[in-house]
Image (cartoon, rainbow, N blue to C red; front, side, top):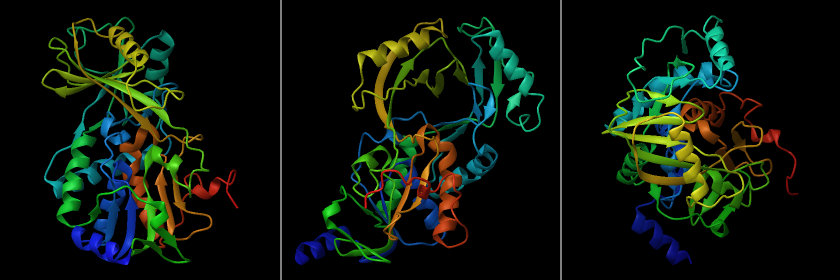
Length: 368
């Protein structure tokens, strides 16, 4: 066994000691690793290039507004200003653009929705997000616009597939990734260190998304995985340069391609697309656009949503060497950058984790 461990480390050019080990290179693990890299920490990632990661099939949108009651998302006044500068730093490192700021046009289904939206444009704290008089030309578009629309700023999307692909290349170039699925039987812990196949670290931090349900240390946490299905469509006559929203989104990707979604399903948690999802997405599209379209791709992913809709970050209640950064749900692109910085401050002893995010808030179900 000792010989095999040495052989493994030698073949992968892996060192024997790191400040941290991160398990999972989805959006959460990637953004956390980059923050630690900026702080000059030596961090190894363990990831087996899981093709069904929710980050790889997500639309990657960020939006400060919750449309249901036209309110600002929780803590968005911290998340939103941090987002743009962070992604610019990451784009500079990877020499690639993957953050695309683009406004949202919210089409109203009822007069009440319209009134709620425009009344909020007059309230303090909303003016930087809601446009009181949109100049967007909608009448010429092949869309159903019976009641009108409102426009939202400081929104956009991140090409998460490109981001994760480029960052994986960066990790490989720095010999900072071990391409395998973590074997819990090979993980040992003491009061201050974690050891995995002869590799030691101050903490091993799990960023596994929905896979956390299979983690023996954290499976008691209230993760409520939610399946989402998406279309990529081609619509030559749509010709829109903003995100359209009418209880679902239609996101322009360029070359007449649009990402459309998403469905929500808490019962069927397979990674396979369904006929029900396909029909649901078709009905949504046809409730808004009037031009012909072609389905180019149909994908499904599992979102790591928490029952109280707050992320779960912190350190295990019993094992100081076990960390967690998870539960980003549907807003990972928006909240992960600020939250990762907050978590890094905690790891360096500069601050405590805010109670609403701290995994210690969950006591129910803890094993003895």
